[in-house]
Length: 549
Image 1: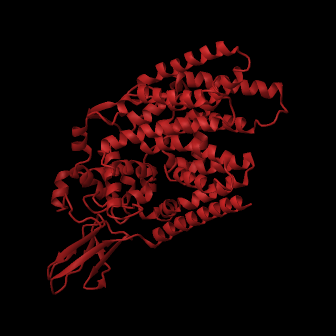
Image 2: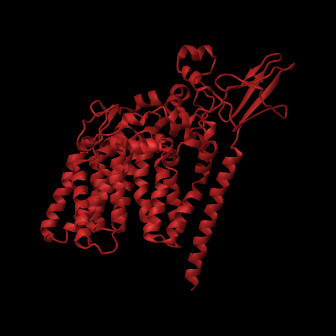
Image 3: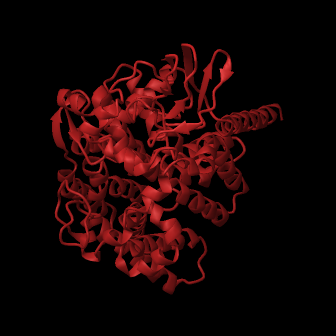
């Protein structure tokens, strides 16, 4: 029956997800939720500002850091903000746009997981696996507690990337590479791990077009990846990232089964954590049972082919859970230089959830062969109700009115004076980090004569009086050009927060400060554009040749 009514059942499942898990993501009411990452709305506002001023792709937030300009989008993976800003540009308020974006990511995550699982399990198995994937309490934590838009979109794109690699051919090469470019530019850390996982998957499925697609995805996302890597020494990112001690954020295995629900943060040890690390009881039970069935099948029929993917996903699942616990401390210590950028070991739980969902689907698929159809149908209905009933209660936020949300997190005061401190790692290296941190104190800010608002955004004009030095209110960086009377001015000195000081002259003059993309950024954008043209041309010529033969 499931094959005959598959699309109808999937549609009903998506409706249930919207009703049970999206009730606090309703964009049509006057409420929204607050979470740890309170800068999401400010980021959408500044990203949209770039687009409306023709600065594509967005690289900086011109208003952040007291109007000195902040290179946030040059380093922070942008895909989730492309989506959310596109929603906002239709006239929908930012808070509602964020809610739509989260809900859209949940729906796409479910559909993507279902499509990927269909390559390996039965219809019922794929549906249950998709439901397990997006109903985990840890997904609720990512949305309503942490407010991590990028991780939720990674959750959505990861199974879609795997599915497209499973089915890619010459005809689908461009669309596969395009979606993979979204995946590779959706999250700074997870995207990097995804590259290696997808490369390994491409080798395992022995599809040469899959490898080409991964390369194409990297080239299409070069506009972000190349500057983010090459220009990383120009900000304080590496120094700030290591301030988070990963040793304080290991998860105790018991917390995966149960840990108290709350809207607090991760702390040292397992007893005082204010946020939950539950993966879901049914996710754990069904995933464990699925792995048990895989082991049983391997022992019973060790020579049977086509088990390399389940075995690989089992390794990913076990390895991910291991990396969240203190037992992996020697590994973290061995690769501390790289893993410290990951900051929180419990981030690996997203991959653990993927593995549990796969094996939950695997177990359902395997058991369907040995249970009478009517009994199995009743069991599936009860299982679906159980998943919805057990986990829906976690998908609720700490709500406030949209008006209050706008006043707190989208006001010019917040964006200009506060938001940059929530993403402090992207402070340009020209500024002394400790001195800049002091600007959070209002008294010091006023004494420093730093303007609260800047009418100028990407192009600024400053009047310099004769006989006086001019302090340019920007963090000195390679993307600003300072000119006067047709000449490029090269500052000879800077203050402690990286503002250029232009030496005094004997006459009044106008100084112009212009934002522009760096040479590295321009080359990276050209690589992405040319790669897109080549991939489209290749797919078009292939389709044309196919139609004429």
